[in-house]
Length: 44
Image 1 (spheres, one colour):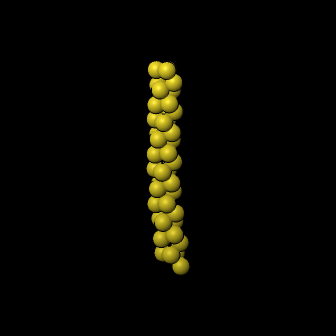
Image 2 (image 1 turned 90 degrees about the vertical axis):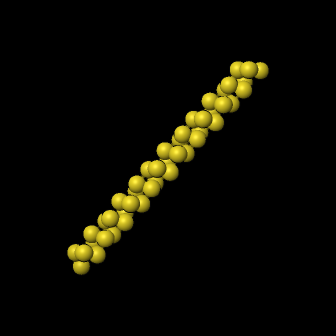
Image 3 (image 1 turned 135 degrees about the horizontal axis):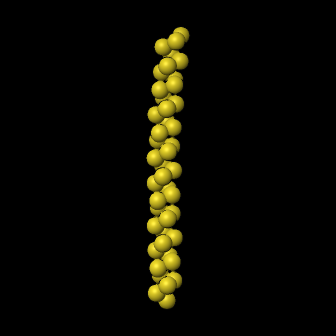
């Protein structure tokens, strides 16, 4: 029973780390898209 609880905790921890990583990457991409849009506006 202890191993099952530990396994669930590990799975949840890995899931949260993965979700946090995806959110950070998405925020970085949003910043990059914004910078590219601004650069395009300056060229026009």
